[in-house]
Length: 238
Image (cartoon, rainbow, N blue to C red; front, side):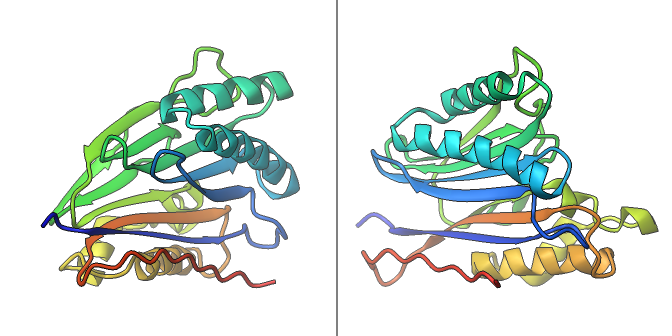
């Protein structure tokens, strides 16, 4: 019998200190031919103007993914759409992480300066090919990484509020060291990992985040005993 996998998706996010609204937007969509996609957009600047930009980007990407458009084409079309709508005057960093059950692959599409951290079994890898943000440069295209679906695989996407945490105090987040200490056996749930990363970023910023900060964790774990039930949970303070 083939090993059954569970896809765990967790997001933890917060807004810039003293700003009421986060400029980061995250949405999840079911792929029409099987699987899930998560879209993360970080709008230029912060607050309401950034939120408006990231909403445009995410809405466009989600609608195309739901129609069965491939991830690379989604990123290009989303770039073209934002470029047209805002005349090349604003940008957004865009990341799409997909569990594609047609190709049985984990697909990471990036138009972002921020790298993606991958864990496969006990090995850490950085996905950091240069990729321009969407919305400004006409020939922008995504950097795409595709991996076979396998147990004990974790993809971690962070916006620049995480990577820049502590910079004003001359510090920075040591992500691999943090995760090695938290999850040495690669079996901690995705939600716990996302919460821990955000908490460390907030600690480095002395609980006053200097930018919108978002963590997305997508984790593939063995599922035993087999279970066909799908579950989705969310907690949002209002």
